[in-house]
Image (cartoon, one colour):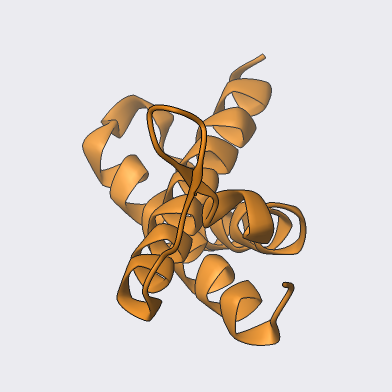
Length: 97
């Protein structure tokens, strides 16, 4: 189920994920505004397209596990943060060309 709440969580987490990744890799920095835009874009894209996949949890035999609200919030946060970091690194690599 797609929700605006999860979309917003992904986008904000993408912002922070991009800045965390930029802080960890000094050679890929390209400015606060650039990191912010890349992180927000990556988080927003993950929020638009990966919401259902982010909260799909399967057990070892392939059966679906139910997730609690706390589990879903953490999964959305982590998915958005990782997508923001990936987007920041992708932009940095394209800029270095």
